[in-house]
Image (cartoon, rainbow, N blue to C red; front, side):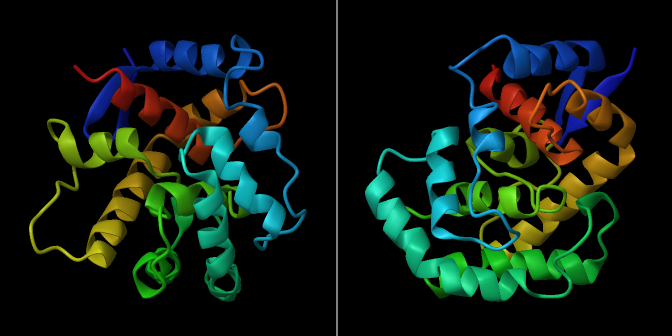
Length: 213
């Protein structure tokens, strides 16, 4: 029996494929797919005003107007950090310099705090700009990586947000790279728009967190 691991959470591969099929095919006009993944956005790999609205398609916030203005205030700095030459490639093969660049990008949340804008919100914008590189984060993913039995990055008092995010990125990278053929197989279930293996990991991680006991 083949199993998939997302952080400390485990699911049998064929069950994971069933979850993904339901999400990608069987919830027409109710699932976030294809709305989030196919939303046109700004049309390039930097953040534009159109991209800021994509967060609502993953049900990120009940405060869309302050979230929009908060993200708008961050946009110039987001794009400055997205232009870092290290912000390229795929997470599965990223080196430490690239992981540090992603951490610096996330660090805008502390450098320029904006009301209601958290990692969950920011990651939803950034994943669409670098869909092979920047993972999505939410409470369910946090459960898999930090709260469930065997979670590889447990929450620790005194740990900086930057250190937590780096360890989390490394854990996601390990799960992605070590199981990449399976994530690709799940990603290939998407009828269009296509999704990346990293998005496939998020879909299964979300389901694992949502189904926690």
